[in-house]
Image 1 (cartoon, rainbow, N blue to C red):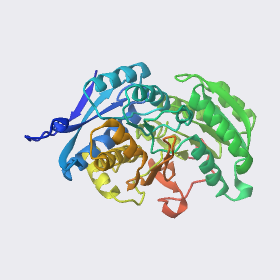
Image 2: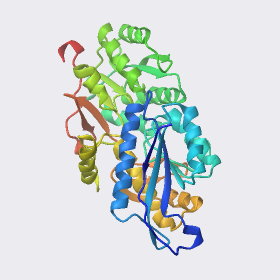
Image 3: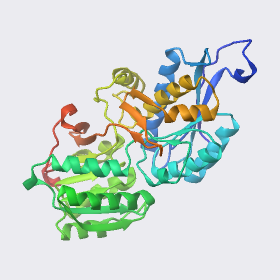
Length: 393
């Protein structure tokens, strides 16, 4: 079991019995290895920097007493079974809240544990909406969900002149709950965005051969590809699209293009892919500059797209604990539910089902960099559309 601890202890005496703890114990289970390792690294960086900044600013006032956050972070190795066991390990250590990892399947497993342990759970980097329909009381996610992505896909495509928009979409559907959910959402979106789904083919996560899906898409003259592969699957898909001659006008892949390894592995072939990670380091919001400076110092570049929402989770949790004035999990849970604050991702509120009301963005890989392309009023580069064939990149 891999573990990271950020611990700052103060020597204090004479506290009331209820607050004998010297720090606020927070637990996180994040995939640092395995298929989600690249995304998990971004989540980890956001949490670490967030905790460092909260503590450097004086910590959190709990019932008139200043306390610092203590984060224990465990690696679940991208394995949902280990997500569950690691969360139980953290529960035994007395954490008052959970921070989540990366990937809808891991979050789905985690939400049940949080509910059983009556411990508030904040998670990003998962868009699965179904989990929020199951009546979970302790689950919160300041991150856009499948219905949001559906609407914003429509908005992105209708920003393109009508005569130039994609007309035929191929959905490469991962055989998971989220894969099915987004396939249905994208099919519905076509009615408003002006495209028809000409191929909707399933594949199992971890597949090595996508040629059947790609050849069907090419035969159907698909000019847009939509999918939500893991990073390894996504890179394999793009390599095989090039090999088999499928060069759509737009490729929109959620999740796979989020980590920097995308460009390192694919080079120019990874350019022009549109992604939807929920944030970009050029977003105009309080604290973004400080986050970027810390991320440059820590990692060598401005904050990665998932680091921002992860950092916001720490901001939300610290704010909720301060408002609750207590380390009681239910009081913290209620304070999270009542969140109405501005974070590094912008304004955040929560709906009764725990989904976040947050800003949405689309990025695009251009010249080996992730550029903010939508909405236009905050873009760092215009949407590059249509994408050129692989041979001309």
